[in-house]
Amino acid sequence: MARVINGTRAFAAPSRYIQGRNELDHLLEYTGIYGKNVFAIIDYFFYDQLSAKFQAMYQNGEGDIKIERFEGQITAEKIARTTELASPFAPDVIVGIGGGKTVDTAKAVADDLHRPVIVVPTTASTDAPASSLSVIYTEEGVHNGTRHYHKNPDLVLLDTEILVHAPIRYLVAGMGDALATYVEARANMASDSANYIGRGYRRTLAGMAVAKACQETILSKGYQAKLAAEQGLCTPDVEDVIEANTLLSGLGFQNTGCAGAHALNAGFSNLSGQECGRMLHGEFVAFGTLVQLILEQRPEEEFDRMFRFFKQVGLPTTLAGLGIDRNNHEALYKVAEASIKSYWTVEPFFLDAQTVFDGILATDRKGQCYE
Ligand SMILES: [Zn+2]
Image (cartoon, rainbow, N blue to C red; front, side, top):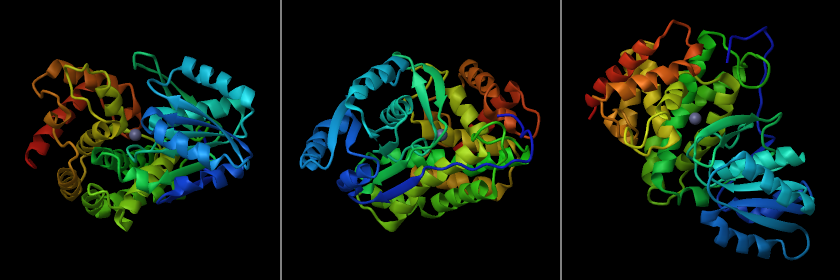
């Protein structure tokens, strides 16, 4: 995003955010706010278990639910097909339960039908659920554009009982995505770049405060949260980190903007399966955050805190951690080159692909010192 075009500030958020143990048991109550007819899209992994539960929940006539199973990619064709399926049912509200692609499909269908949307993420691995956009792919999994909506979800509903039973790697990757938020917000503030609310608005104090709270929560509680969540325990620390990964990070990035960490994630997505491991979004972003800190020449204490935390929770601090060979300079230059066309532009200083390439290798070397 470019520099702000005037002094106008803007802030956006979901209308409601509800997080707690077994909150999905109250779905009928939550959908009832919007009407009787509910169209739900459920990830294939939860489909059998949850569709039986919801059929029983809605059978007494207070509400009517139609459930569609989601599997595979989120494509423009699949969105159109799902909208066509939902339309004759005249839904009062759309519900999306699952990973990013399921939730993003629900947002798109709700937008096409001009209906409210409830999103229920089943992992705390990214900050996408609370945002007002969907990322679209081709059937082959190639990024095929982003759909921006005029509003955020009407309700973001998190059932922490489900979230603590997801593989721990998701919660940790979510911390990686969330730790980028303040680092990137600060770069956007330094260059007075626009946030993602509309036509070039400036960030609010609220946006920056949320981004800062996100970082503090994760650095201070992330490790205890990981230890508890990997036992399936839902302590207050786990609840705090889930909120930071989902709400604070989501509000933070949308209201302040992305920078180098997400630019590198875009760069890494150009690598083939042979050139890098099968990593999660938050794991690429985490390493990207370290590179951004190096190129911004941050104080040693800041690096040290970040590198130590990454090591403690199991986020990648080296290229080997991403399954990338540090001697594959051709691939790494490709990453740097692709990233330079992305969010690096908000940094308040000049950068070129060669400097980013050097930054990647310097970060990797520093990361080795923490092995
Ligand atoms: Zn992200």
